[in-house]
Image (tube, rainbow, N blue to C red; front, side, top):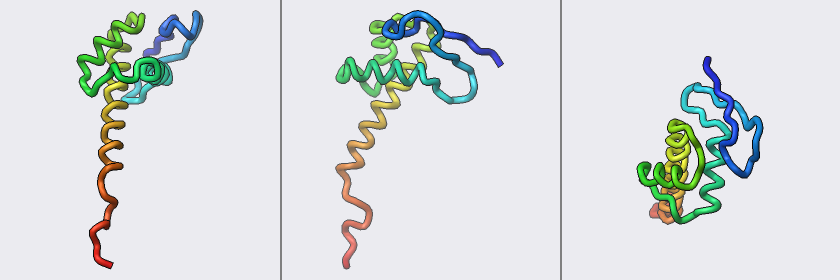
Length: 102
């Protein structure tokens, strides 16, 4: 199992050991999630549900050197946006069984 130790991924975290990223399945490490959530908090209206535009924004807004890590962050951002849009649509729908006669 190959593992990489990431240093200086996020400027706010300083230098040193940030964590270990392993290549096991589709599990996202806490580094990817934390960077994505931090970007969403700083720039809430910049990201869309389009992966390509999010990938370009991640490249512009961060200093991440790894292409794979940038793509994973952009993918997680896209997923967060799509889930938030879905939950918004879901809350506007009528609850199940709303039209039933009682």
